[in-house]
Every structure is written in structure tokens, then in C-alpha cells.
Amino acid sequence: MNTVFSSGAATLEFPSTCDELLREIKIRARLRLNDLTNESPDVIFYARWISRRRRWAWPAKWKLNHALNIVCTELQDWEHARHVLGGQAKPTDDMGGLWYDFRCQLLLNNWFASYAEARAFCKHGATRFLFPYARQVVVGDENFVRMLGLDPESSLWEETRRDLLASYGTPAWRTLCHLRLTATRGRLPIGRRPAARNL
Image (cartoon, rainbow, N blue to C red):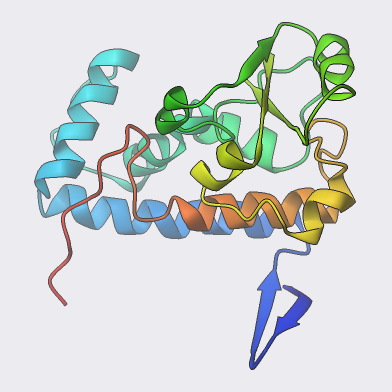
């Protein structure tokens, strides 16, 4: 981990390599496996929903690879997450849905089929942020960023020029990915939260 900045007494650390992003996914999958094994109602609800949608067979016994795929549904599956978060994707690849949240449907955002159209749109008007979504590009404002659980005032956005396609794989991009993954740690992708764990 690399220390990026200090805020008061707390020093925040962020990933220095893409492997550390994948480590976060693996940690989350282990937690989700525990929820699946204990049959947490919200987690089972989501597992059934995504299994029907993806046409996955319902396992007789939950294993880590099942939990990895469920956790990675914002990026399609574990192999796709390894490809995208590992910094190996090309600009024309499917980038998954990490940079979108169903709650963003409540906001005005603009969708584009091509990067060039999205870049041209961003040159005009208010502060805009450019995000990959599958093979499309979505442009949102500060409210969109907040809905993703991120701070639109962060200096990281200046480092990426508010463009998460052009900055793909850079240290600032990795840090924003880490923050996005952290922001979604306790939520299922469809907006439901797993039931609170008994400590």
C-alpha cells in the first residue's frame, strides 16, 4: 500500500498496484461466503436474483468461487474483474458496471456510445465526470459522484481530469477504484444491504 495523504490524525493508505484491488475483492468474497453459508436473507435474495439473471446453477454447497462471482457482478464475474481491475483492459473492452449505481437512475446523467462524443460533451457547461459503463460512457455531475460514495472535491479527480477512461490504470484511478470498492463493501449491487452480522 502507498500512503497518499494525511487528513488530521489519520493517514489514509491506497493501493499501489492493481493486485491490491483484487485483494479487496477476495476479502469481500470471503465475507459474502460467510453470509451465504449462514443464509443471510438479503444475501440469499441477491444470490437468487443474480443466479436467475446470469443463469447460474444454484450450488449444493457454497464455495469461494461462487462468492467471488457474486461479489464481482458489477464487473460481470471474477475473471472479468481480474481483467479490468488488473489494468489489462483495452479502451474498447467491456469495463463492467463498477462506476454506476442503480440509485443514479434518480439523477440526470448522459450516456454515450463513444468516448469521443462523451469527451466533446464534457467540454461544455458545468463540471462533469466521465465514467465507463460496459462498452458505453456515462457522464455525471457532483451528485452522481456522491451517489457512488465518493467525494467530488477530492484532488484525485483533478489527477484523472475527471475522466476514468483516459486515466485507466493510473495511481489516481486505482485509488478511486479502491474508494469505490470500499464505499460499496456493505451493499449489494442492487441497493440492498446484507443483514447486520452478529458480532
